[in-house]
Amino acid sequence: MTDSDPLVRQVIDIIADKGGKPPETIGLDTTFEELGFDSLDGINILFALEDTFSVSIPDTIAQEITSIRMAVEKLRPLVEGAAG
Amino acid sequence: MRRVVVTGLGAVSALGLTAGELWRALAEGRSGIQPIEGFDVSQLRFKNGAQVRGFAADQFFDRKACELLDRFAQLLVVATREAVRASGLVLDDELRSRTAVVTGSSLGGQLTEERAYTDLYRDQRPRIEPLTIPRAMANAGASHISMELGISGPSFTLSTACSSSAHAVGLAFWMVRLGLVDAAIAGGSETPFTWANLKAWEALRVVAPEVCRPFSKDRQGMVLGEGGAALVLETLERAESRGAPILAEITGCGMSSDAHHITLPLSEGAAKAIAGCLVDAGLQPEEVDYINAHGTGTLANDPMEARAIRKVFGTHADQLPVSSTKSMHGHTLGAAGALECVATVLALRNGLLPPTIGFTVPDPECDLDVVPNEARRAEIRTALSNSFAFGGLNVVLAFRRWEESRT
Image 1 (cartoon, chains in turn purple, blue):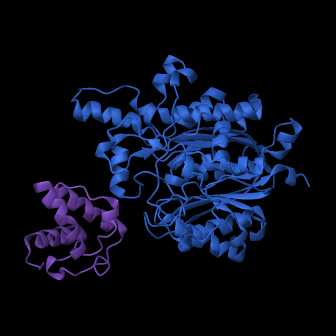
Image 2 (spheres, chains in turn yellow, cyan):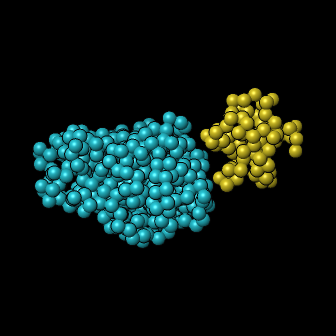
Image 3 (tube, chains in turn blue, yellow):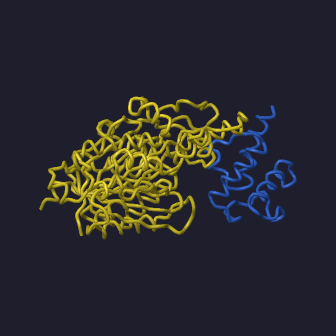
């Protein structure tokens, strides 16, 4: 998985938009903590991801999403499941 | 300063339609949390709630009142009738003008609002029910109590999320103590089971999928509850002179604000309210025998509350039982403070600590004696009830067993 992966790009764009950060400052291994996000930023991002990809992210999985990489890793099977 | 006592209790909750039924369930460690009725829970990430069951409005209200009162106001009025009946308070003209009604609700008549929006936006109806405004307003419950009992002293409603009715009880207590009024009806109610509200809580990701396990390592969140509760407060002098059944003395209240974050609680704020309550009640920390915790079962609240209790009580916290009855009646939001005051007074009276049920694995972050799973006999004299709200608004109330207060 690299920064040029289409899903990675999309997730970064969503998170940049919701968090009010320039997308070029966010990479695959950037954590929400590094971006200064709190729990409310977190649930806003989860909502935007759910809404964009038409998936439901269970709370137990949501709690593990603390970085771009984790967001993509947890989202991918849900997105592919929804598409398939 | 005048001493203030509790002479009547009323409660409508998932554990039954009276305070007596509430207490029986709490004493048995029986949960009112069940699969949510009335909604398609396959479209929700959580499945269970603590709804009031078997409440038929027409058993309590005539046809006109059924139409005029939203369910949130009905639950409050029914709880108040029970409390006033039990207190034997006779509201003559003089007392009516010297009595206050102070209630709390976070959401008010949201069932009524949702019906109006459904009519308007989904069904494209050109008009909505004419009683929408008087049904939905948050003070409707307080106003109906005032009208039903002829109470002409100050009546108002506080809305401070999950501390709403704790603020109401605390302020009513201070008003009686300071002589602003001679008696007060203090309480609150909440009916959070509307589809929009369920979806809003789902999005906030603090609701457990099935079970509420406060202070347990494997806790997954709160469970929403519905209910109404009321207390009759009056001066000790009045209660004694009329031979009223004194259930407990209310001895102190502490309030504080975290000034920190809109949803994340801060232990310093909670500790400040607990410490403030001890000062207000003239209590030393080691005199406290039991705390009815805020204990929501969320990841954030429970360790914060444990830290706050440790901060105030130090090593006394090792001998201080702290239980969350929310594990049984759910988190009734704006009604929680008053409902848990009812539970706290009944714990003092019955010499029995209600348990924290659903407790499985101790969490080192919540290192308290949480009275796990089974009620415990204990001749307690002084108990606190904690309430902490979103927005960082904290209220702690202190009660004393009545027999001990005579000396």
